[in-house]
Length: 406
Ligand code: UGA
Image (spheres, helix red, strand yellow):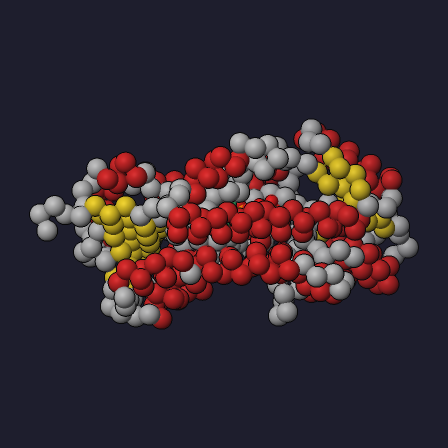
């Protein structure tokens, strides 16, 4: 709380601190832990608590239930309650019921489902220049109030009912996750056939019906959204008795993809015991320090379980990674330091600085010049100019340049 008041963001998100400072000093933004203070003047209340995954894949609604309980106790005037959290179809109705059962004051509450579509790392741009704003409500005046709030952004609205709005969020995330699993399955075919998945994706992406976005093959999707939301939608489909085996396949392909680099290294070395591995990237994607469901976690665990010694470098996520992976791997301060004496380099997150690496400097400090690029982010021409190297990308032919003197 104090951190936020000082204009400091508890997470790494480009541009966020500038906005915190600008809006706090202009008196447009304030923080409090007091429900009374926060709610007494509110016309619109936005619930944006987490809905993490629980044991059987379904969304854990406990934070939402607590929020409803707190609201019911402290709401003192008529208001619109907006659920921004990602919640299974039917949840807004459940929240309204919880509120009505527990309300302490005689006030009128209207509900709006308004799912969030921003991505970590580009959160500000995604918010201010969103593709769409979904407003799901069964009450026209509540819907109008939320449209009024968003109107300055000049983003297209889709007005719909509450359940459809809830479903749009899961359908969007599950579709994007499936698009990634699809291109990863194609990547594996490309590898076997000798084709290049980057060109295949480019060729597909020109077709406006397919679109070029989210066709980057790699080591699978991670983060706090796709993995849990695909599972939660699958859970909903089972609950409703409507089979959705496509989602099972999306998950299975993703699980397999996250083990891809380790599988390739095992094939190359036969055994990984005492091999030194440099790992570049820990966060689940660039421009964030979030390592929830990051492929790096699985990869680090598989490597150390196989007896390898891992030194990892990430521009911002090492601290969070240490909390989850622990000290079974080393955390270092640069790519070159990670590469010192390494038998192989794993690229796990496509941070911009990795594609700009001075490859010669990295390769020269390695024990063996072998690279497994899980994000296809190195420039092949620059790599080939560095002399002997073995380069294993995803969904593309490998490059093996042997030392001519050997
Ligand atoms: C995702 C959605 O893109 C947002 O629209 C949504 O609001 C958010 O979830 C959420 O539900 O809160 P996010 O998880 O922040 O956003 O990040 P993405 O950029 O979607 O990436 C997710 C994962 O997919 C990352 O691990 C990324 O490396 C992977 N990915 C993405 C690929 O492997 N290939 C691609 O082509 C794109």
